Image (cartoon, rainbow over all chains, first blue to last red; front, side):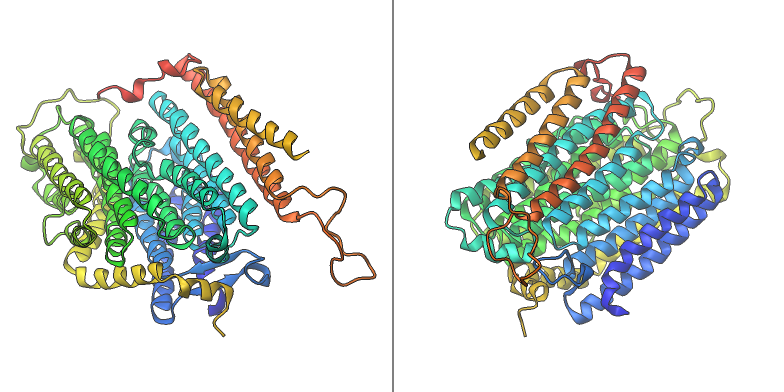
Length: 504
Length: 117
């Protein structure tokens, strides 16, 4: 029963989306069932998380084909944490979708595809096979293509063409990397590859393969100079879709980078230098990019890029404390970025626009909601004791220990620029005097909504804010968790033993 | 044979990237298709080509007695072909739809998403 426990999150998401398909045109049923299913998946994810926490890394060999020959599913602490975070963000976005996504979109299978996306995410986090990871990536991107185009507005389709092209290109590069990797080692199992790669004589070829992986995952994660598709597309789909994309899709790229560069291509000075330079440039260019934007969602898109830099920097420094910082940041970032895009959705509903120039006066008219929104915004900046502050301590500490002063400088610069951006945003959107905008006809303003509808907007934001507050105030627990994850990642023998069953 | 395939893969990657860099959306799709085929052939090539030796154990034996073709790359290619087929058909529909809405085939004119709004 518990043997296959780690696969249950996959089965559950799949079952939800299949059941939802049977109610294709019954929107009310879809809304209720999607939220209900998401609550179930949070509960299940907690069970899985606790099980892994108490019993260590678990593996399932598909079809009982022993690793390295079959496909292995592995749940270590990192995977279990990410599955839990996916479930939490999924629940919030599911409630938010029920409130905010238009009927016309829901009628074309929004919810089933949404749960397929979550299935793909869970799969990518749980697999232990590099080609299987590619397949999960494809499930993720094909669901995300549908979600980004659903509705078919002009801006959406233009954004989708860019999003689509760059993601396909990333997948092709990833596939090429797998081909070369298989050519030099003859294996696809990540734990097995760890040993095989170490024995390869031709280090140059190994480094080129690693670079191919870096480019492929880098496009998906949105690192400098590969991020231009991200701000061109993330502000076009419905707000709920932006939320799940902003919170989770780029983070899958980061997860894959963490996995590949801590397990397969381990601690190579040349690669670490490149990753570090990329991280510094990402931090700076994302921050500066966000500074000049006017559309709320574009500001947040550039902030995603900027903050990816923190995690990449953690991988580049490659010490236990740096990885702990990167993982802590990942945990904080998934929750906060999902929340921010939902916040922009709430603001849009209140005023009918997302342009910072036209917005204003929300604090005067909606003080309670503004105070709620204050939490994710300033968690992002990392004003202590809110959640963005703690991982940076780890990263800066690791930077000083490794004498990477430029990285430390970039990290501090990026936090400072985030503060400037969020302070400007707060002043423009919430504090500035209210501007009379022409009322839009056929637009469901927040004021005119029923209480139940309003709750569908506010509850998910509140839910994720509470999680953010917990990450901030309960930082000790998260720190303990990230330290344990970092320990597992740096001393990867435990993972390898668990998969290949070499211990006994 | 290997040299020929290697050249083929190189040409497919080259033309694929070239086509993707053109401004037309139709050429973009052609580029994606060529690139996908290049990647598939690359897997095939790097899985070592063994001629005329299917991985089937003869009836009177329990193990392989001589060199055999590796079946894994072929399974990988099959999976990759199916996936890229799905993605390509989606791409064609997307481009057709984008063409009807935006009324252009030129990627340079699709700049509404970069406008300041």
